[in-house]
Length: 121
Image 1 (cartoon, rainbow, N blue to C red):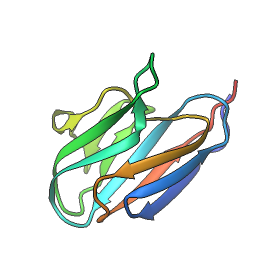
Image 2: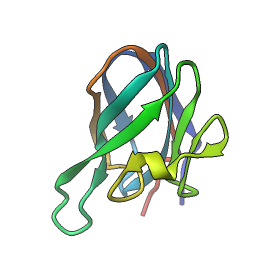
Image 3: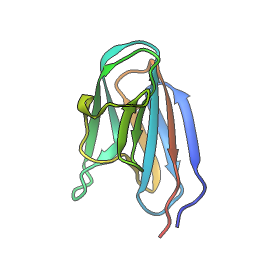
């Protein structure tokens, strides 16, 4: 079972996201940078399946004002609708754990939107 979609957005480098579900939930993260960048690192969305150790996501070659989508539901990674997988270092699909999740980015000059449907067992 899953609940209604929840959407959280903001600007900055740290976001606390509450997942009211009681199971891991796929997440869709959208990032729109205000300036072009060499890379951005995101923490808090990918974990080792067995140890639950947090693994960073690194997105390289970022263009100004082009939306990057990391879709944990469909397994797609795009920039303005074009496949971006070759520019992303990622160890799993983006998920949220039950409860409060801290999402951190190493830079603050972008807009972030996160969508998910809480899962219940």
